[in-house]
Image 1 (tube, rainbow, N blue to C red):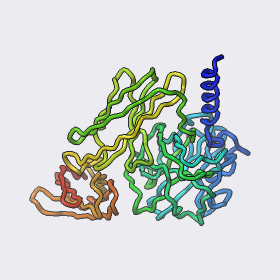
Image 2 (cartoon, one colour):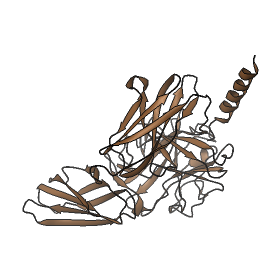
Image 3 (tube, rainbow, N blue to C red):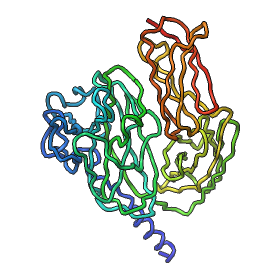
Image 4 (cartoon, helix red, strand yellow):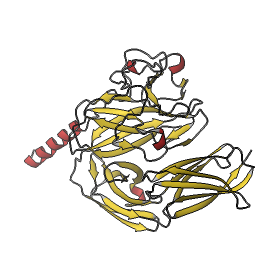
Length: 409
């Protein structure tokens, strides 16, 4: 074998070795015994609930360990928390991300990584998440978050932990089926601990109803992955971008065959979330039809035929769009009791919503502090309004837009 081939073989063997999953018991299969009731996370090997209580004891919060061989309320697939079939194997971990009747109630589950992260190394983080189908919780939230730390995080009872997560969904997540969420971030320290949960307080937690169920947001997790974003080949991947009205256009030049291309977007240039997967038959371009207002960063990842990965350069695009406001969702419409408005907007201190009847009379007004964020959820009560058509007007700074909504009885 030539010296070059020996070197390439060594590099690939080192790359594959370091690309192992750093999450122990990542599908929650190893246990010290089957769960027999809620809050028995401690039976899942390697995981803890950050407040130290081995099972749920009010007011201490604990995630729930669910298993197909469990019993009673926690036997999958039909548990008290919902109907859920594991994505992998026989077990899942589940936790509240927001509770509508107990302010700032948070459940976390945490572990120590199999080895510390390397500072300045990029990592891929993959979360498989679902809200399942259930009558326990019918709301989605943006509380799907992961924090990496150099020491274990701690919760006194059930309050949000004051720590900034490196990975988080940017909008309300609700799905009755398993969804794979993929992120990429660069470690700034030798992080050794991983904590999953919602690190925002209620005021900063976006939420909206997504299905039948109670007044809370509850998520099921399976197959968690944290692995170095290792590049194992020498193929180049050049990414370019341009603005097209309210859209962002990307195209790229690639060398070498690939399985597919994954498109990642970031609001800050640090944490990237997968937004699309492009098949090779679809060409070498992608149009982001609804980018968040303002500056966004993009990069793409080529998954090669041999299993290796090639990352592109990063492209920065500032797009104020045709309109800086976008109604991400208005739910439900028709509305009977409550109307939830999710608004994408420029960074402002406050957003406003107004309901106007057919005579032009203002029947309700609502203002919510936005604190410089780019997405805000407003909740309006319509239970005392007469059935009929109304105009919803939303504003952020000097910008406004309107939409017709229906109040039913």
